[in-house]
Image 1 (spheres, rainbow over the protein chains, first blue to last red):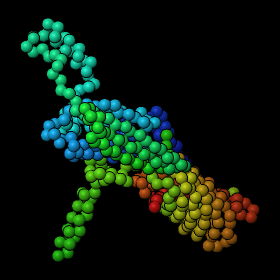
Image 2 (spheres, each protein chain N blue to C red):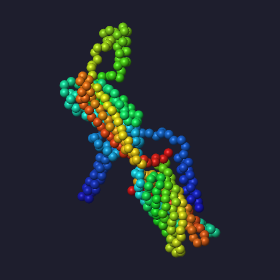
Image 3 (tube, rainbow over the protein chains, first blue to last red):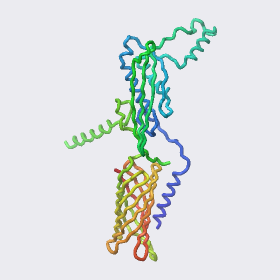
Image 4 (cartoon, one colour):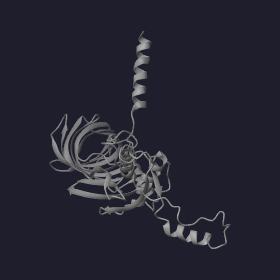
Length: 198
Length: 181
């Protein structure tokens, strides 16, 4: 009878050993471009896939470089029409960074206009060397405005769940209001509901 | 020549492993299809084969315990969900020349990487000599997940073997590997 008692004691000790508060204390750095779908929400991989498609599409668009100059673009509104909280600024910034680095587009800083205007006021106030002071009147005018919409659709039956995202971006000519470029990226992710312990 | 072919096969295997890529988002468009997922969540509804090796101890009223010696068995089960499975099995106790044919259910609770489980099975206890008897065997055990397809576990079962006049008890302890496919 000793063996069953020993086994029971082992089982009990393992159970006790797994109890108690737990925290995320063991981590490793990982390649952010490795696909990781731990849950069913919008994640960094979705953002990377959207950005990759849009960057390639914009760079290859012949209409943007037709006039032989590097066009200036301002970032417009990015609408999140999904039911999730998604950092749209991060998505736009990812696009902006890659496009600036490609040298195919220039971007004007529309986000910091108020601060820039305040800085003009300060530099023109007499405190700054007049030969170095910056002032209004020399900013470049945007040729295009980049906007986009992210929408989603969720289908859930029993253990199965399908999450669908569609990101649509467009560049609008600020002079003519013509949409000179648009593209979309569709993402569909399939999930199965499984128990994962505590 | 033989060495050359062995080296070639090895090189092909190594290159196959080296070229196998995990899912990434910086490849060609749509190359990410089918990749990802929580690694510990295996597919729902799957068959499994459980092998067990251990020993048992009979407990007949009025008699001292008798060690049965070696027992081995195999269970074929179907996991309907992670927490519920049905299984049928065959176990043989070598010292007693006793075959046990069982069918039952298994309830599991996952706490990665451990899977705790309890089971209840009904069975036919068929000795080489003597009459066949019906019995019930509740059990409990713990598995540790080695990978998505293989688990190593230990299990304890208590058998109530119903004979004409008395109920014979047996304690079984076994360890084994469980393969999911």
